[in-house]
Image (cartoon, rainbow, N blue to C red):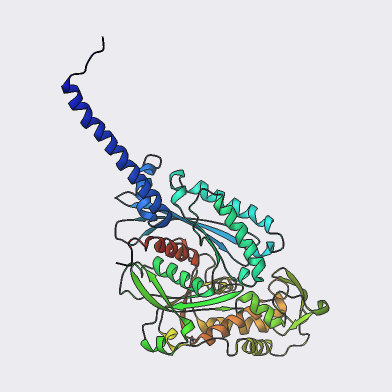
Length: 454
């Protein structure tokens, strides 16, 4: 005989069933909202949940004190190599994030070297992605954005070849476990490169965390291009500069009007080729020897640039080689560089080849960096050019490079007594544009949190 349940049991069962259904519904809504947020909007909000999971697997105190942890992966595809920067951030609610750790690794050659065989480019990219997988906890993979930005090396390639390389990289990214956006792979225009480097140095010096604190300017000298960026404090700078030199940056709910410009073709390697009389991407006619007064007298050798090998030599009898070299440099810089008076009053950091050349000749410490005045480059150039016969094999380009840097800085408007700070790292963090670029990218993911058509 079937047993009939009593009314008390039924009264308890109905609320319990309703509660279970409600719990499942709320859990589903929460899961669905989180998935959408991680893909389109807030990396840091999702990372709060992932952080709780990380605490069970990592040493205590890694972030602590209510900080949300999140990561970003930035590939720098330069003209001479591809580098990956893996950043770990921590952030308290409504505060500027703090950089906790950076992992850096580089491979040579640059992506542009695979322009005629794009399949070969994938191995290096995958190798660097594997580094990221080792550095970032598994729970964070799907909410960590991976981005590649190519610089002058790909900007100088024919458009079709560059796009094929970028498409191949995007395929590798989409097969990875990381967060891949529609704009995850691109050629970075020169202005963005300068702005991103400006963000990096001002984030590391604390200027972005403290509204009203004086910001610093940025000078970067790469192989194919050179950038200058600073935040004007004088209204006249904004009014008198060409429109293409002023760019608007939105960051941390603030808008900055920056003076920023990138000079493609005025990077150190491109300048060398121009001073030798060569043409970018083209072998010399009939393998003709390229001769320059900026090279040691009687020097003969070979130089490779952008996958082309050139035969080069110095003039046999070069009286006052620094003056002759300076005249050549002035010719290629003439009417190409915009000068603004305000650079005299802004504190500037200088990176890349500015640092490398200064360290090579002992103007700064090779490991720690240091400060110098603009005139130091000119004094060094005159000395090296006068004595270059004694070191013509070890550093044949030193006279040319120092003379170029000296005159480039003067063209920007820097007086001889202007102090520049040269460094590779601030608080043990690389001063490249990569940090600023991933920072800005993550910040842009968080912006469209609410509809704008209210």
